[in-house]
Image 1 (cartoon, rainbow, N blue to C red):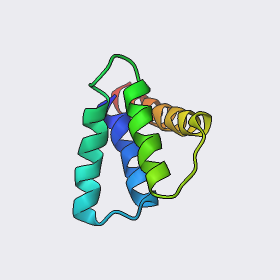
Image 2 (image 1 turned 45 degrees about the vertical axis):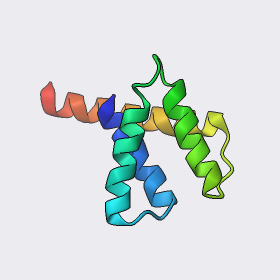
Image 3 (image 1 turned 30 degrees about the horizontal axis):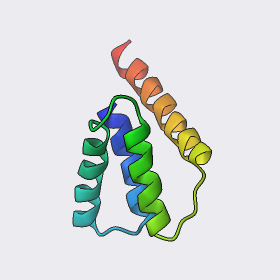
Image 4 (image 1 turned 90 degrees about the horizontal axis):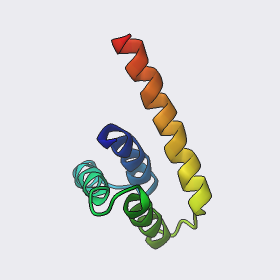
Length: 83
């Protein structure tokens, strides 16, 4: 899951126009946010809040769709290299 959260964290950091250093820090924050509570709600809450503060209105469903597309990509890459 950390790899998946990293991918989405990178997307959000790019959208928020983070500098390279800030981008790395932000990705770590996103990864850490997912261990606060069981499930993905803490992760989605953080990313949605950050996007909102950055001036991007985003629906939770759109965020979940993006997360799922990252998950599918990670799954394909995993199978490509390990099977």
